[in-house]
Every structure is written in structure tokens, then in C-alpha cells.
Length: 147
Image 1 (cartoon, rainbow, N blue to C red):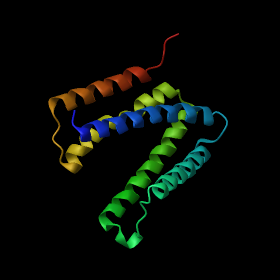
Image 2: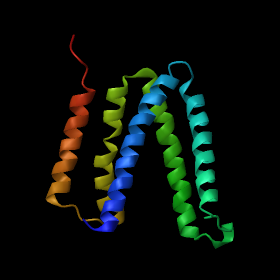
Image 3: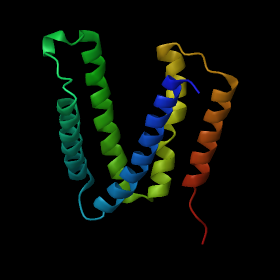
Image 4: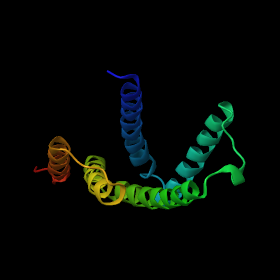
């Protein structure tokens, strides 16, 4: 396996692992706390962790050195992230964690569609099949359990 592919895969698996922990910890948090306030606390923690990592790696740059196009898309990404987190925490507050997380993973399907429409990626048959299976899995996992 090529080193670059292996690296992104390792980080993607780390992302999945930490996302799973995020869901469980968030569900436990919103049982005692309003979901909007929980999102604010989480956001502050994410900010502090990111600042610590950038500081430890000495990756700071002057604002005027940052590409304007990148900054515009980072602001848009930040807005989307904030809205996603607010929706996610509210869903966790009122719904079952397994259902919320499975429906949230429909983002995989949406990313495939948007990557074709907005980024120009060309999906393969296995990307299409995988997306369909993710959608089917999200539906099956989020169905109410029978008693």
C-alpha cells in the first residue's frame, strides 16, 4: 500500500473512532445539559485543542499570508460545521444515539453527490454501490426497534 494512501486511511480510521466516542460522550452530556450549550462547550474545547496542536507544531501564519479563497471556504466550512453540530446535539438530546449517528452518516452519500456536482469528481461503480449500501444501512439502523 502506498504511504500516502496508508496515511490518509490511518487518519480516517482515527476520525471514525473519535467520532464514535464523540457520539457516546455527547449523548451522555445532553442528558444533563441543554444541547445548544453543550455545543458551545464542545466548540470551545475543539478550539483550545486545535490552538494547542498548531502551537506545538509551530504552524502559525500571519493572517495576510493566508490565501483569500481558502479563508472564504474555511469560513463557510465553519458555518456548516456549527450548524451540523447544533443539529447533531439536538438530535442526540431527543433521539436514540444509534439512530442519530446512522442518519448522520448519510453525509457520506451527500458528499458523494456534492463531490460530483461541486468538485468534479467522477464516481466509480463501487462508490455508487457503497453509497447505496450506506444509505440502506442508515435506514435500517434508524428504524424503530420492535418490542
